[in-house]
Image 1 (tube, rainbow, N blue to C red):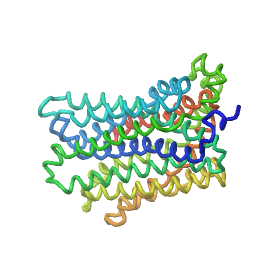
Image 2: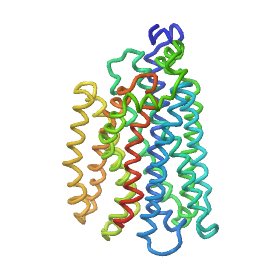
Image 3: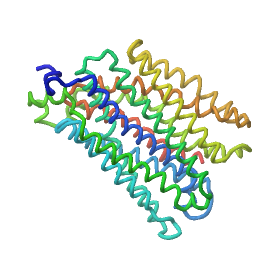
Amino acid sequence: MSAANAVSPGLDLARETRKVQLVSGIGTAIDYYDFAVTGLLSATIWPTLFFPKGSFAASFATSTAMVLGITFLARPIGAILFGHFGDKIGRKNTLIATLVLAAIGTLGIAFAPTYEFSGTFGIALILACRFLFGLAMGGEMGGALSWITETATAAKTGRRGFITGSLGIFAGIGVITSAVTVLVVSNLMPSADYSNWGWRVVILIAVVVLAVGAIARYWVIESPLFTELKKQGGDIRTGFPLVAVLKERWRTVLILPLICVSGTTLANLNSTFVSGYLVAAKAPFYSLNFFYGASIFAGVAVLVGSAVMAYWSDILGRKRSLLIALVAVLVLCPIAFNVMLNSGVAGVALFAPLLLSLPVGAQGAFFPLFAESFPTKYRQTGAGITYQMSNLYEAILFLWVLPWIY
């Protein structure tokens, strides 16, 4: 039975692929929106709200390291948990569940009490919610990559790399939206109101989008390749997907994360530690508005870079496109850090996050590579755990390396 025959006769698979592309992209956009917002808040607002008064640098480093680090640690667990059910039950239902869990975790942060009212309970609640969000997003990417790749394959499109890699475009949209939202909200209200409750509005926006995304996914078809495999039985009814992945593709799981860790680390450095660096360096031009504006530039770079790399991945191939991106990391990042950020000129420093984020566009090529590296029977587990291993490497950096620098 072909994948096309696994769905309702007469169904326009090309049209359904676009739908899956959109509803999968919502999760990716929220993931990056959340990370950018969390990075901005943990670097600017939360150190003074959820930690005792003292050294801002220490609170800043602890805040960003804990908030981002705990999420990175949770993601591989989420990839295994949701990957198991995604490979047993289906992509669609597990991806609805990831957005629901992410909404719960996000909602809890919006109502976290400050240190003044509850001591350390507020930051403890944030960390617990970040862990829930990490679980959800850990399962999100593997499911989204599987769903969109398998639907595009069934549609027999020649642009599968671009369609799957377009998740990187949605990532850029998430970063841009987060920075614009924070910039607008923080400037439309008095700074005291923004620090007290305005930032919570920014968080609640994500909850609304997550709810809408979960509902939208309900009305989209299941992966045709998974549907076909399920009808055949066998492979998805017995055993554990994780065991099969580690037995048959363990080298892939260990090696592929090294490809994307540089880009995703740069994305999170952009949303957090660039701010701390400029504050520590006492840059005369630095302000929150400058930082938010720079974050918008970074989002544009992610969007454009992902679109280009996704397009090239269908022409040059996944590996050659990734090689170009990794060379860009070696060339652009030293210029951004050592020249532009230290220039002392606002207009020059503003473009540093843009250069730092251009290599993040490599995800436009490594998204399809990750999905295509595993068979349908355990693709969600394989793609998910492989992608999230890079975040586990980042967790080590954010929890145990970067705080010592500050």
